[in-house]
Length: 102
Image 1 (tube, rainbow, N blue to C red):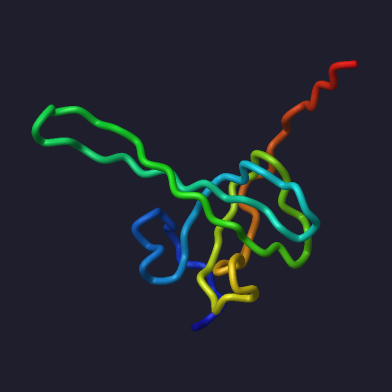
Image 2 (image 1 turned 135 degrees about the horizontal axis):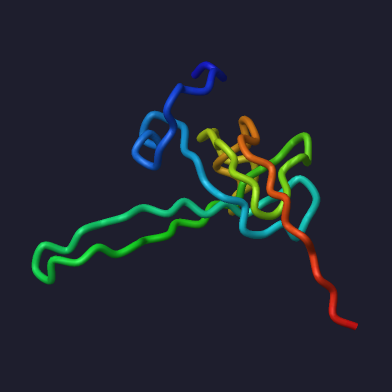
């Protein structure tokens, strides 16, 4: 599998090996949790709803932060339980301000 990023990356292209999501957690070094949201339509109730899939992703350069939009790629599992994906590129860096309560 080549390491090139496809031009348009959506949740559907994860079958081809790539997906785009948002970093929702970063608790350990070189590990981020990425959420991929997808919109679905219920034909019976004629309503749209959102489903979310969470992936534990290995970030070798440790450059992804909370709120960043990243492209991830499928790979062989690096550990038995986690890391079936690797961060390919960080698309959008978030400019969020962290507020601390003392």
